[in-house]
Image (cartoon, rainbow, N blue to C red):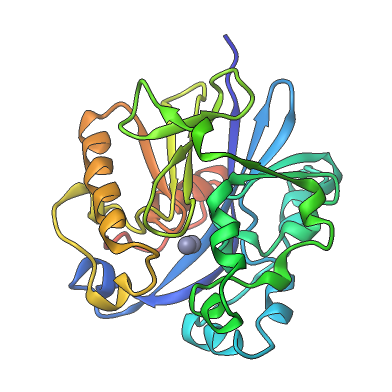
Length: 282
Ligand SMILES: [Zn+2]
Ligand SMILES: [Zn+2]
């Protein structure tokens, strides 16, 4: 039976006060915007998110989006396409991009992939598109990051196509119908927020995107500090998702990885070998 091959990449970062998550580390830490390249045996390269990308700088120039850039202390390091090219993955070989949610650090590189179709939960964009520009900025959504032909290439997935998953306590949708890449609905952080279950040769990966930020959130009880709840779309749903992720973590069946956590950085460091990782504090 076949599997997928998964690679992790950094697509820029922002700095945030770590104490907002762990209640004890009063320092600004890098929250890298990680994106994944997944090689599917039939469909080829499938990206999961795209990092900040080159376009973010320009998209965040204009009011009311400009303050987001200052608040997030954000840095885009390279384009998603450029980062992939360094490892031999050509941008036009990417036929699919899964968008976990539409926050700037996840969709900044969409314009780099002219041949890709975009897969996402039906509520992910709809809920943000109808907000005022000010509310869009407050929700960390930058419409200017979407390619001009986005709607032509969009393959949104209707809510009813997400069904109870047999292996995790969430609703999921099998992207290509072969069990290799399953989108899993993880409500709360953003509208239509999804993670991805990946069947790899090693331990199966539960990529949780932004359902949690650091592993301490699922390893022990406790919530975020109040300001960090302000950026969640639905704080109650966010906490309920975290509680279920704790069950998944305790089951030991999955390798749980969040976009902005130390485990994703470890994957990148392992791939590069010998690149030191920021000391794990949470
Ligand atoms: Zn997010
Ligand atoms: Zn994020």
